[in-house]
Length: 218
Length: 177
Image 1 (cartoon, each protein chain N blue to C red):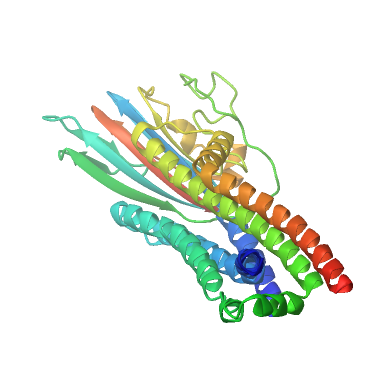
Image 2: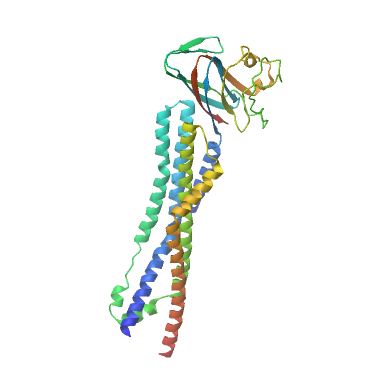
């Protein structure tokens, strides 16, 4: 009975650690957006500078092409830095702090159970779900933007070499479809994770009511 | 809270940058010319324009360029590149779309609508234009020398004549502000 309680408690605490990690996604969203917007501002600034210098100074077209491809690297760099920043924040969340308490056995497990502030836990789960959705949307939008820029670069190359151009709406739609297709595993993972969080919420609610009932009887 | 303001500021900067970027235009064209042809570069007065013209001359032949002032230049190299910059010479005078693309080449200025400029397609949506007109009649360019054409107070024109066989590639870019 004691072992069952401890293992169930370990399972719950691991899930709650996960929730804590997901909750940091919400708090790191402003940084994520700031880095992305900063990369876009840098990309557009260099783009404007290249266009102005090629118009008024007459930069060599070869140099212009090299500069253009270097500029395109700014956006993926921004996206990678933004994602790494969120991941670093998630990794910095302290987990398994409850292990030593749980090692004490049933008394430790009960102590842990009593220390749980259920309303806060439910709020954290709601936050975690929100963060998960927002992060997913922001990631898809960022990759879509990147795909659109890459497609415009490709279109420019096609126009330069073959003197043909691709319709802008086609570029936007094709990029979106390509990004959604390439992110399908991530989307499925995200969807399953949301389901798991919902399940956890219900299980915790049940656990909370059982615990309160048990407490009352005791 | 400060981060929210920073995000707002960056969004405003991006909107301003995109608006400025939408003022840039490009006009690219290419064509094979033989006998007597013309390159016609045009822009709205309120735009800056830069054209890079590549002339690829057939091997063992040459082409002669004749500029508006009568100067002639013979090109014997296989590849020749020239840059033409047309500065801003006037202000934006409102949205008045100018003409449509005219593909016909009149035999004389009096034969068709006098106010039409063949091959030029300029509007507020397309303020920079480059064209290669093949096999021009002898008096074709006299059109462009007529200062009384009503479009001249809105557009700037530059042209030169090419005699010989060559491939012309023109890459034009402009800024309309």
